[in-house]
Amino acid sequence: MAKFTASYTSATGQSRSVTIRASDLQTARKQLRRRGIKATELKAMNGATGGRLKEAQASGGILSINLGEILQKPPGVKEKAVWASKLAALVDAGVPIVRSLDLMATQQKLPMFKKALTAVGLEVNQGTAMGTAMRQWPKVFDQLTIAMVEAGEAGGVLDESLKRLAKLLEDNARLQNQIKGALGYPVAVLVIAILVFLGMTIFLIPTFAGIFEDLGAELPLFTQLMVDLSKLLRSSAAILFAGALLVGIWLFSRYYSTHKGRRAVDRLMLKVPLFGDLIMKTATAQFCRIFSSLTRAGVPILMSLEISSETAGNSIISDAILESRALVQEGVLLSTALTRQKVLPDMALSMLSIGEETGEMDQMLSKVADFYEDEVAASVKALTSMLEPAMIVVVGGIVGSILLAMYLPMFTVFDQIQ
Image 1 (spheres, helix red, strand yellow):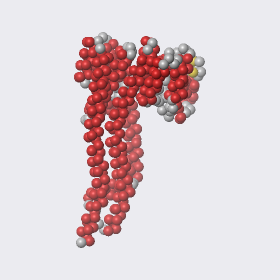
Image 2 (tube, rainbow, N blue to C red):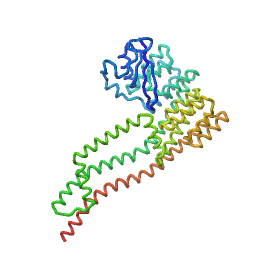
Image 3 (cartoon, rainbow, N blue to C red):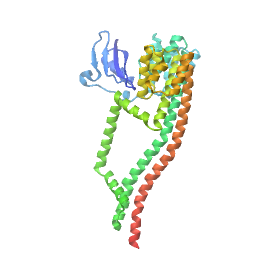
Image 4 (cartoon, rainbow, N blue to C red):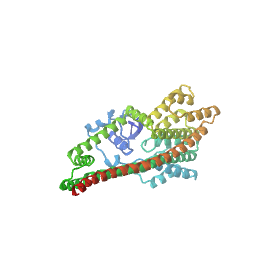
């Protein structure tokens, strides 16, 4: 079998590469698609047939695509946390790692995760290190998971590393669920309110407008505006507007997929009232928790910073961590490097500086993570308490405006009757 190197772009916009073994170029592409990797470039190594080819140039520009493989869902934080916890229990109980991986694979319902665990088990059975085998599936196992496993293998404490990984992923999942819980209710109410408004405007207002026209009633200005809006929504212009909206969303997604666009949007998000502060606290908590866990597990500080930057959730904060990594590589203290970036809160930087002075940086960062996770929970609770009445007012305003538009002409009709 020949070796192939595939280049691809990660979810954070960073260029990465992965090496796979395959009999030919076409088989290599199929393996990449099964792993959920959209390669931008595929290179054959060791003089294998195929040379350096762009993914889109294969087979004369025609690429057979298995839609089922593309639509396979990679595991989320919750699934990986459960996997790490169960695998840690099996390893701690003395079950061989290959047998443990096979057991975990049989219990998985996600096809991509199941294939990855099966493949990792086969590689480990042939003598490959577990962390090295996991690197062949970058869409399934992120850098954080791989680094924790490799650190556990190197230190002979794989079960402890897996327990720490499970705890870390559970904390991240809980933090994400808090954010989703805060935004889920208002978003759902807003969507329902928009659907109610469109339904009443498109179907209800024309009925009343016809009745008022038969009665010869003069429509008030507000009612006339609503009638005109109803006509507009039922015309071909509405289809054009919907098409323009979809194109706008597509253009925005394309712009946001670029590094420059992501930075521009993320910088704006940090300045949004209420939400910007919540994003900053969440990113700070995640950085401190992940960096603390990685350094405690024995992962080198430079690698820990690189992995932490990928999980920040905001490109501005992620780039600040990467720039700090470059300064640390030159000999600058981490607290000094992060202070120069002027991104993270002063309290977190002060605690980090104290941790460096006392030699207990991982413990200090763990305490900072606890503090900001509590801050996130408090902010989410406050945000929810503010958004719930606001959404009620919005829904009431939408329904009330339509009812007002329908009842105003009735007063004119009553005056004509008198």
